[in-house]
Image (cartoon, rainbow, N blue to C red; front, side, top):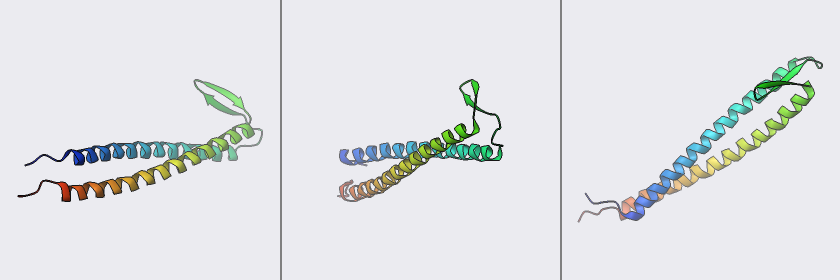
Length: 119
């Protein structure tokens, strides 16, 4: 059995690196989506409270008293930021998946045409 040509080995190595990037991006996106759900839940809970309710924000190991309006505003800003990040990561994820498909086809074609030939 002959060894695989160097150019095909290089294509496969690049493909594997791109797969790892795709997995990392997917993981980041999932984490952002989880945080978005938590923010949505917090905003929902704040809506249930009376306007003058005492609300505290956890900052590190301490709780700081803040107004409901202030915390709601901060959460909405954070939500917008996370939504933008999720959209950006989703686009990046789609782009990488398309590139992976392209690379996979190139590798398969290289293996068919440049692979070891029976002779």
